Image 1 (cartoon, rainbow, N blue to C red):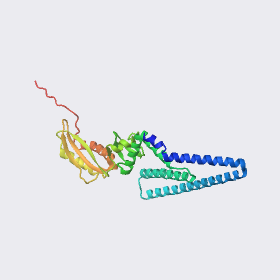
Image 2 (cartoon, one colour):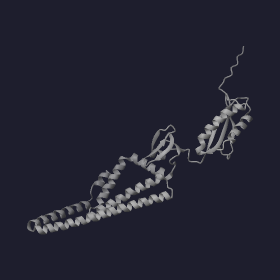
Image 3 (cartoon, rainbow, N blue to C red):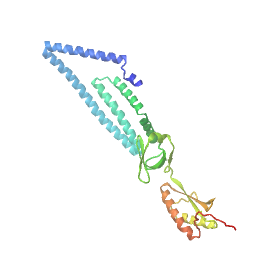
Image 4 (cartoon, one colour):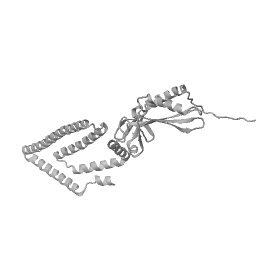
Length: 305
């Protein structure tokens, strides 16, 4: 209903259209009458009108090309400022694209007004059309708004490993409507920005350091002090492991078939998985050499006669 009302011309617009139509009819009738009585004067008058139109078109063309040149210079200047201040590429690209659209719309409206076309009704129709398209593409606009919020608030950036909407992967690109993830097995996941911006996001790359944890099961009867010392020696030899905070090597659980030791250390975020796998391998290799055994699930059965 709002769209139809916006497209309906108001009383003032109707009067202006009627006046312009009457003036055109009077002008045409006068020129044809002059053409029948004095062809030379008619052609002279027609030439003056054509010259006036040509001047207006030339002025509009000059304004358009000069305006376009200014817009290009302005956008290039903005890009240089963004590069100098090291603004995120996703944010700078979005801002420049939006600025380009706004400036070109203003330039086209200004150029059309020079020719003599009234732009008030044109702007109203453009706004109404935009409203109608917005209603039809409400979901898309929600994703657009979500993309803007992500670019401004930066809950994650390109290269971060995130979990969102039940999916996880490395952020490959942040677009206006979607976020592109790449999984560890090289699959591409496309997430709409609307739900992502309003949902829970787990960013495992946001912090500079992360804690790595292992659960090591040893046999009942094995010496915990020896196991603890052996694990500490393994950790001390890895330069990637941070010394502050100190390691945690403690008994976590007395399970059915094993004594479970929890091992916790802190590393730089990029080293997380390499440290995790390497320490796993070293624990598996070295602890048996120290007389520590890894238990198998077992059940003791006592038979009495």
